[in-house]
Image (cartoon, rainbow, N blue to C red):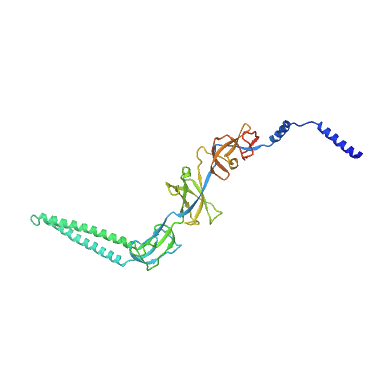
Length: 371
């Protein structure tokens, strides 16, 4: 071996000997050094509070007119005139359509004649009875039996007048049905028939003449699931939106609760009165409503990131005296940023804000509490 190569090998061996003679780091020291480094990192933690956040549930619904009705003729007749059409606004009591039925007019005239005839007969029998009373003052001029007969005839004729007047009023009421008026203020939303059509029993009685809906006041009907029935309060404020006006939020208050659960849907119907003075909202619009509900007593809500699920369990990591403990929980209702949990937890417990499956159970951990 040449001299230069021999020198290189000698220097390398000397370097290894010097290195082997330096200070040694035992595994124990390495563990302490690593622990020191770990202590520098602190996990974010939150304190469970007893106060529960405001919760809302989103429910679909449909707007309806506060009042709406189909107008059907009540007597057999022909349509003479229709004074309104689709889209017309009407006031309460306004004349909408006129019908004609000549036979009803004839019956009314006949009934009126019978009333006058009965009144004339009563006037005659009453006058006869009064003359009999004057005649009875002369002894022997008239018998008591004749006086009673005249009295009975006058009473019978007076009752006949009452009967004929009642018949006349009933026929007059039928004649009044020939004029169809608006039962409330609203808008005509449908008209199916035209002048000349026969309506009433035996005619096109299955088709309404007009349909009227109230637009300045609406009602929103929502079906609330059975799980939330205990949280519904009359007068609660409800906000909703419609697809037509996506950037606008409307509101109203719960006015009526049905207090009856439908067995087919397991839900209870509630109604919200909606003021609609500008008539922007229309009956039949579908809405998305946000219904506030009150949290039940004993419920605990934590950040969604605090709850972790793996193949074995769903848990949160509670920190007690610097030690991480996995506590099994069950999920409940979910809000935008929090989730309701059930388990062996109570207000005041400290849990990690972000749970991690890499943190072993019963391991030491450093935390810092955040709001």
